[in-house]
Image 1: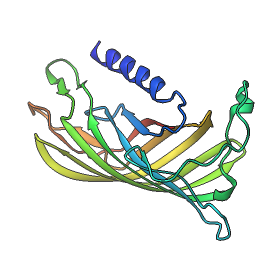
Image 2: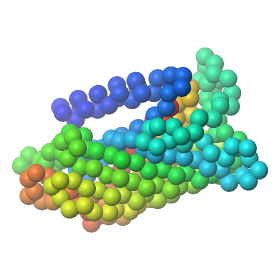
Image 3: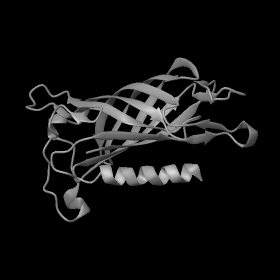
Image 4: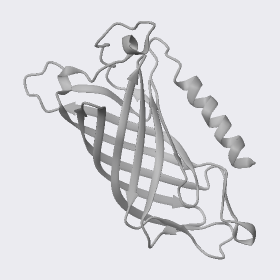
Length: 218
């Protein structure tokens, strides 16, 4: 019940954040189904093209949601149809570009486990910082990226630890000046909750784990 309520609140927040507003900018990402807590946070990002002669090789840079470079203009006018409103990747980036991502996240209320093994992860119980360098590219299907993710996980109830994995962006959709991203993080050694811990303690796991996330940029 709690998980459903949190999902409803976050869905509403995403809809509000994604409403286009002149001169506004912000970045947020929601990580769910991670062993232990779900997390939400602000990300830092910048895309840099490899084309040497391009007048503008940098696209949509921000630090924790605060823009440091104006967003690139629409490639096509915004119309009433989805096909009219869809943005394309700025030509200044080329077909392949460098994506420099990172973020600061905190945990949401989520119960991990079942029955007597259930563990509670509340607001700000767990924090995580990430650095995610990737290569972005275009295909006939859209915009994608692949690279690595380096995570630093910490909390009051457990010792801080590092974790590394592969980050894949299967699709990125640009529509009405909003970018919607689906991100997947693949960890050779995922995350585990320490057995018998109360309050809950998180640690680096021993088995493979993949984690979904949705990011919204406007």
